[in-house]
Amino acid sequence: MMQNWEHFPHKADMGIRGIGPTREAAFEGAALALTGVITDPTEVIPAQKVSMTCQAPDDELLLVDWLNALVYEMATRKMLFGRFEVHINGHSLQATAWGEPVEVTRHRPAVEVKGATYTELSLKQDEQGRWIAQCVVDV
Image (tube, rainbow, N blue to C red; front, top):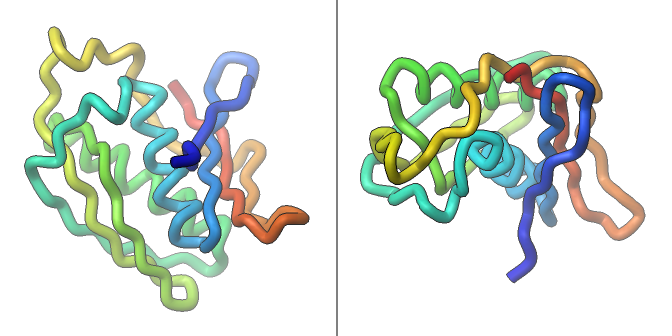
C-alpha cells in the first residue's frame, strides 16, 4: 500500500502533505503527516474515537481548520491519533479520529505541534489526478 503522506523541509518548522485520490483522502493523509511529526503513526493504537466538525470559506482554510482541530484535541485530551475518516460536503468537514492517550516511553514524542499555518498552504490536484493537501505546521 502506498504511503499517503509525507513531510517536506521548511526552515524552523515542518511541512506536511497528504496525498490521495479524493480531497477526503488527502485530508486524512495530512492528518497522518501531522501525527508523523510527533511520532510514528503506525504505533498509535486506534482505541478511542473522537468526532470533529469544521467549516471554512474555502478548501484550503478548511484544511488549516481541520489540522488545528486535531492539534486542539491532541493537546486537551493528551492523545495521539493514528487513524482518520473525513467526509467533506462543500466547505464543511465531519471527521472521526481514532487514537490513544500519549505514552511517552512508547510513543517517544519528538516535538509538540503548536498549530497549522498558512505557509505553503495548498490543496490541488496533480497531473495524475491525485489530491495534494499541504501546509507548514509550527513546532
